[in-house]
Length: 470
Ligand SMILES: Cc1ncc(C[n+]2csc(CCOP(=O)(O)OP(=O)(O)O)c2C)c(N)n1
Ligand SMILES: [Mg+2]
Image 1: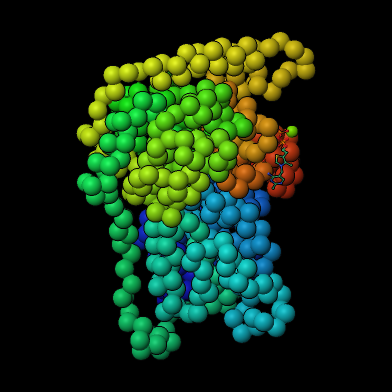
Image 2: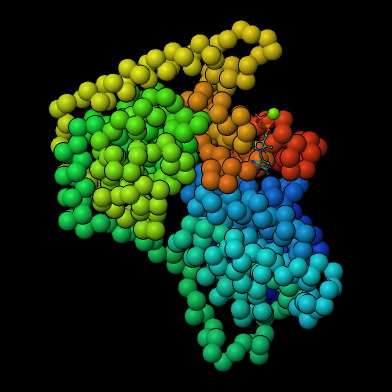
C-alpha cells in the first residue's frame, strides 16, 4: 500500500512546484513530519543542515542575495524558531525574499503551556510580512502559495508554522470546508514590471542634462544593471558612488567609479557627493544620510522599485519607480553626452591618489601585521567570479575598501542590520547555490565565534565544502 500523503508532503511538494530545491535548517521533534517528507523527497529538494538555526536563516538570506531566488529555512517549534529571528531580520532589512518554516506544539495543546509552546506566528508578527499557522491538509497549499508570492513580490520575509501533529495528518476531503474549492490556488509568480511614464522620464533626463556636476550613487537594486549604470555614468560624465550592497555592480577599478561611500567608503566618493549639483540615486536605501548631498544642494532623481523609498533619506525632484535596469534603459536614450567632463575627471584624479594610499596601507610591513594587508593581498587569490561575503566589524571596512570587485564577482554582507555572524552562513548559501565556484568569507575572531562557538563553525565550513558535491 502506498504511503498516505501528509500535510508535510503537501508543503514539500508545493515548494518543489515553486522551484525550491534547497532548504537550510536544523532538526527537532517539532518538525519530524517535515523532516520525514524532506527525506522522501531528497532527490528534488535538498536539506542543508547547519548547526544553529540563526545560521540557517543567514544562509537562506545569502542564498537569496546571490541567486535572486527565494531562500528557505526550517526550524523546529519553540527555541528553534526563536533562533531564526536574527537571520530573518537580516533578510527583512536588506529586502531579501526568505521563507521561514517552523513547527509548533500539538494543535490541541497550544496555549496550555505544553512543551515548546511558543506561538511563533505571534513572535514573527513584526519580521514576517506574511505569517500564518497551517490548520490542516486542505489549508497548506493555499498558505504556501501566498507565502511564496508575498516574499517574492515584496522582497521580504514570510513565515509558515505547522503544529507537529498536523504535519502528519493525511489528506481527507471531509476536512475541507465547502468554501475552499480544491486546486483553486495557483503557483504562478507574475513579476511586477512598472516603467515610469514618458513625462517623468523626460523630467529626469532634463534635470540630468542641465547638471554640470552629476553624481550617480547606486545600490543593490542595480545588481544586474552594470551596462546601464556604466552607460549613464559615461553619458552624464558622472562618477559612480557605490553603496556597499551595490559593490559588485561595477568593478572597483572601472574609471567611472570612486568606490564606496560612508564610514567604510572612500574620500573621493564623499567629495563627489559634497560637490555635486545633480544627484542620481538608484536602487539604494543607504542609511547614513550625513554622507548624502545636503537637502537643497543638488537636483535629485531617484530610481527605486519601491515607491515608499522615494524621498526616504533625501528629497527627490523626480522619482522613477521600477526595476533599475529597466528604468535606466528607458532613460538612457534621453540623456545627452555631456561635453564638459571636468567633474568626472576631478573624481578620477582623486581616485588615483586614493588607490595609491590604499596600496601604501595595504603593503605596510609593520608587525604585528595590519588587517588591511590581509585583504589587500587577498585580491591576488580571488577568481574573477569569486563570491565574497563579509561579516560585521572592522573587517567590513577592510573588505569594503581593499577587496576589489572584478568581472563577475559577487559581494554581500549584512547591510542594514549589520549583524555579526552572517558571513560564514552567507558563504554556505553561496557555495550551495554555485558548486565549484570560489567562495570567500572575511570574518573576524568575534564573528567566527558568535553563533555557536568554533566547533560549530568548523562543522559549517565542512558543510560548505561538502556542498560542492551537489
Ligand atoms: C549580533 C551582534 N552583536 C554585536 C554586534 C556589535 N558588534 C559589531 S562588530 C563587533 C565586533 C566584531 O569583532 P570581530 O568579528 O572580531 O571583527 P573585528 O571588528 O575585530 O574586525 C561587535 C561586538 C553586532 N553588530 N551584532
Ligand atoms: Mg576581532
